[in-house]
Structures are given as C-alpha cells and as structure tokens.
Length: 212
Image (cartoon, rainbow, N blue to C red; front, side):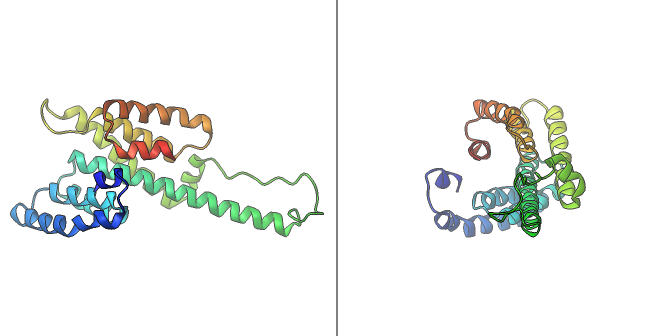
C-alpha cells in the first residue's frame, strides 16, 4: 500500500489488498494467538490507507500481547504524534473562531470601526496541552511510548529486532513538530527528520512531516 501511495495510486486501489491481509492476519492469529506481528502488519496497512483510528486499534492489540514489540511501539508513536498535532490544530481553529466573534461583537471588524484592533494570538501549544485533558492524555501516551521505545532500543541484544536509530530520530522529530509554534521551533524538527531520512530514506512519515 505504501508503494502504491508513493506512486500516486488512489486509495481505492490500495484498499484492494486489505481483505487479503485481514484474512492472512486472522489465520496467523489462529496459528499463534500470542504473536503481535499480525496486528502490527494490519495496522501498518491501515495507516497507509489513512484509516488512523483502526490502525491505532491494531497496534493497541499488538502491544497488549507484547508491550515491548518495537515495530508496534514505533507505529503507535507515529499515530499519536499525528493525533496530538490534529488536536492542537483543532484547538487553535476554535480559538480563532472565538476571537473573530469577540472582535465582531465589539464592532472592531466593521469598516468604520475603531482603528488599531488586533486579534489576540492563541496560547503556545505547550500551554494548550496543559489546559486540555484530551491533548494532555495524547501527549502523555506518546511520551510513554517514546520512552519505552528508547528503552527497548537500549536493551535489544545485537542482531535482535528493535527500533532503528532512524526511527527513534523520526519519532522525536514528530513529537517536536506536533508541539511546535514558531518558525524557530521548527529548526530542531527539520534537523531530526533530515537525520532520520539520511539513515533511512524509506520513512514516509518523515517525508510527509517535512512537507507540512
């Protein structure tokens, strides 16, 4: 599905693969109910199809079976970073709607209204997280997954599967991107994502983040 997306194929074409993967995942679960891999692969396909809630549910199932399963931990950090960014964007949009209403009610948007009216900017994203339980919950979950991913990377024996350095850098960059306000805040974001892509150019989530 990711290959099709890279080549510009419509989502409908990629979704043709979903029933087959769902059937394969069900067979794999029946053969080994303790394996986290079937849910991981299904969740990764669902993320490629932009079905983010379903993708996260599959990674949740995988991590319920194996809390240290690095591929699912990484996938969930990507999904949570997107979810946090979307929540903060929604809060900022709500802020500007309320601010526009305030200025209108004061007559400050009328052509002959008082001069020098200036809208009040929304709070910094860090402050928005602190005052919004939903955003705070998403960030806490993201930080917990990122810390666990770092612990798994540090403790994985040589030759054993674990998160790559590129994935760790990408996950940190996505967290920074979700909580960044000013243009200056984006410099460490770009640095982390570029370093990740230098090590692994196949990280589509890093390319997508840089394109925003």
